[in-house]
Amino acid sequence: MDFTLEKLSTSEQVEKIAKWLVEIPSVNGTSGEVKIVDEIAGFIKSFPYFKKHPDQVWSLDIEGDPLGRKNVFALIKGKQTSNKTVIFHSHIDTVDVKDFGQLEEHAFNPEKLIEFFKGWKGNDEIQKQAQSGDWMFGRGCLDMKSGFAVHLTNFLHFSERPNEFEGNILLMANPIEETSHGGIIAATDELVRLKNDESLDFVAAINNDCTSAFYPGDPHKYIYTGAVGKCLPSFYVYGRETHVGETLTGLDPTLVTAELNRLINNNMSLSEQVEGELVLPPCALLNREIKDHYTVQTPITSYIYFNYMIYERSPKEILFQLKNIAQEAAETVRSYYEAQYEQFLKTNGFPDRTLSWDLTVYTFSEFCEKLINQGVNVKEISAKVFAENKNDDIRNVAFKLVDKLRTLDENMQPCIILFFGAPYVPYAYLEEKNEREKAVLKVIEEQANMVGKETGESFAIKRFFPYLSDSSYMSLVDVQDELNDLTDNFPEWDSLGMVPIDNLRELDIPSINLGTYGFDAHKWTERVYKPYTFDTLPRLTKQMTEAFLKI
Image 1 (tube, helix red, strand yellow):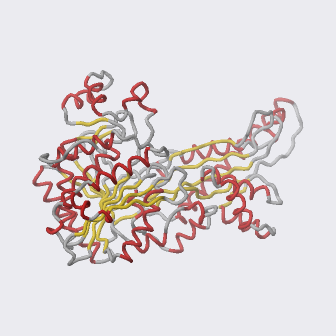
Image 2: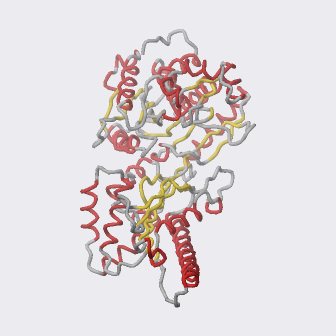
Image 3: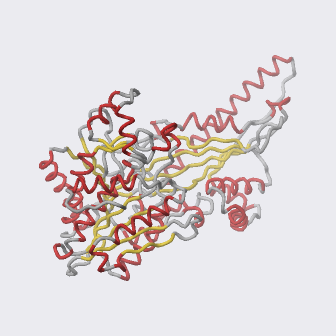
């Protein structure tokens, strides 16, 4: 960091810090996630307040992380007549930059990119935006380094005035958000410690993950009082192998996963109907047959998993819905085979012959119960498979585990096994279940109205941040028996689930998303709108923080 913030306006400070953060590559899964945390910690330590209180900035390694990634925390203590604490939190990792193509070397260089887009003929609107000077380009500028720049700017502001507010402000920067939320999950242990050992009373957490327009001409800026959840329903299909010369006597599992894909992928009828919220359908994230190399034997097994957004639906409801769909897919494939085999016999002049293409559909817990009744020690086998494959992708581990258990079934009949894979992301929102939550919502409404009048912005308050975020790991909306339907159908939940349920119940912190604004997150045209993000957003965040501390 080779710039000074003195004599700069708030918006100029945010822009300076945002540009500096973008220029530090921190692609998820690289050493850049370590470097940026060290840079951030060093920057915070340069604040005059932390020169006097160096012990109030600290980093914690994420246990078992092969890259040595860590979370960074910093705490400003105001007038200690109150333990009320507001958390500023942001993720600091980005997705990869391969999508930039020939511009990849400039993906983290806002100045180079703005010059390119000023002359770019590929999109008139983007070219005009670049020429206006109101937009910043670059990987992470929108998602979400300009958001963290807002937090750092406000954090500096409050650090210069600790005697002007009561309570505390905790800043937290987390890696590993773009894949498994590993940073915030690890950070919940420290938040619980701070709550108990330091008696911090967490009033609210403010995240500022990216927001955008829902449709062309959308006039609103969105404030979210929670975040959508997610599960990864997965289907393992065991068919019946055969030689290609007898293909119709087999049962190709890829036909089954193809039918599951047709029935589920982007099917809006499967999405929840939640009034006033952006709802999304499930979508396929992987569809693969399990075969190591080429042979003329047809595939034996295949698998598919889906991204499935959760708003209010329980794991039990999801299992019921998807098991019915799996049974429909099994019936469609059976009917298809029967019709094709009948045509095969007629074409070749062969006599009638009866074959079966039946598939039994199980949930994971049902299949495990079946094996247990056969004398299989499911827990022991599962633990062994996990130990042998713990360094593999956690979704592959789950499929290997299910595959191993399937081989132990003495019946060896074609089947579909439905289970949940990682990650499971809890949904969270302000339930207004107590006076504190009602007061938090009142502050949000009042401040949105006030800043809207001051700036001319039109704010809309929603419950669910729709794009997945670390906000899901501040509290837990759950009923225990509903969670059992999740954990019982999640292979090696204790090892692969990674959801700190007890921590989330204890913390129970409302996490509000006051997001940056722009377009094309995760695209090479990613850009952030500076007038709102660098000026209005820090004002809204600061005023809301001050109001939260007075609840």
